Length: 252
Image (cartoon, rainbow, N blue to C red; front, side, top):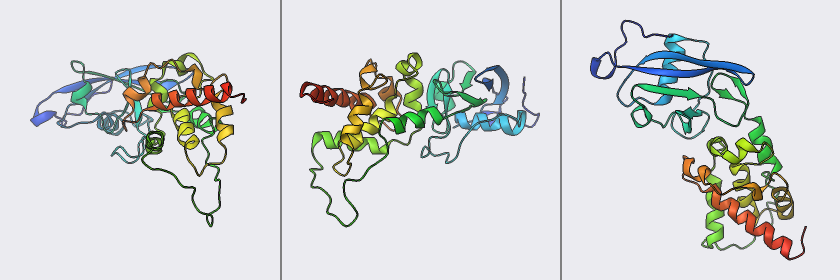
């Protein structure tokens, strides 16, 4: 067990300590390791993980960058729920004095708290996530109504930063490795409603397949856990409607 040094004290100079279990290992094997970490006021989960790496075990592997909820790279499982650790305050998730921190669910583990994001981004591309312009820079932008409800709903997806919180929260992904996942399908919905995108049929082809939108069980975990308050479940419902309409009209 890692322990605090003698000079470390907790909130207001007290000796309050947190009992933190951290996953150590890879996809092929590992176990939780326990650490005692000083408790401080306004302490985030990322602060806790950083303290362990700085003062208890320098070999602990994890990711972070901006620390202000802009990049999403610090996403981890905290007490079995996916969260941005830089924005999650300890006092909001603490159970007694205990915390459990693990790598994101539904992804391979490179080491410790660092998940392999390749499958997530591979599915983002497979869902048609790359923009294909319908016109050059010199051509006029097709007219759109920015107040159209569908446009408003689809445009909200642009705020996705691909942190994979929704992917880790999704039970369908957990049970079906072929499922494209909420973030990839939300991106597909955004581009499907983008007048400047020129591959709408390709998107509908991609999201109609065996791992596509119709695998979604509409449980809503993706929307419930999104730190940016996006609504992937509604985007997936839009794709279901669009693919069904095309099928009924005799499309592929």
